[in-house]
Image (cartoon, rainbow over all chains, first blue to last red; front, side):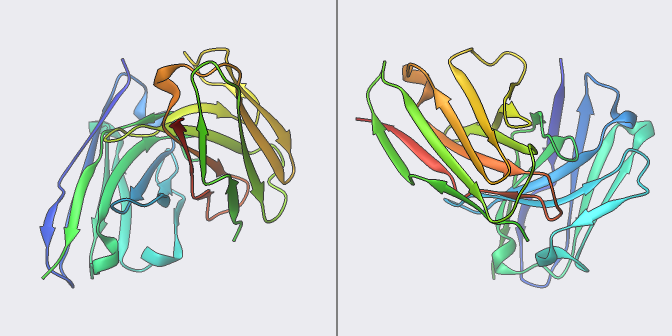
Amino acid sequence: EVQVVESGGGLVRPGGSLRLSCAASGFTFSTSWMSWVRQAPGRGLEWVANIKQDGSEKNYVDAVKGRFTISRDNAKSSLFLQMSSLRDEDTAIYYCARGGGSLDYWGQGTLVTVSS
Amino acid sequence: EIVLTQSPATLSLSPGERATLSCRASQSVSSYLAWYQQKPGQAPRLLIYEASNRATGIPARFSGSGSGTDFTLTISSLEPEDFAVYYCRQRSNWPYSFGQGTKLEIK
């Protein structure tokens, strides 16, 4: 069974940092693009970043470029999102999903709250 | 940046009725369009990919059509579990983007 499980969310002050993790199982992680998508409370979906199988290609939405870094560890079937210089508008549920374009399996998400 | 506009924002129908949801792209996305269903407190679920292909395990009452800039998700006969928010998504050009969603509610 394919599973992706996010962790690492929490409350952080504006300007702070947080690292999200995603543990994948039930599929060959090393052959899959992976993505992070977020959803602000009561709002729609926003693609944050994606990363190629070997980590050689990464894409970011403009709103997070220069502040967030996506990475992966294929040996541990894990995906990461390092977030820094966090802003109020980064408050959202962050979902990890399999795929770089077609997101076919999603985790349940981890809530990040940026507030003073 | 490609903008996806979904209509209507809210659709009120009864179980057994046919639902037609629309997604329009600001420029051609070829067939690189998908549809997702999201229920409260849950992650989105992939329904349709590449405009017209049902994802694994998706019932046949869900169908997608269109190409270029105009796309449609059709639910042929609504079941009680189909009432949810539906999003379209393009992967033609980065940044990939989602529509703002259509809420399908029980009339």
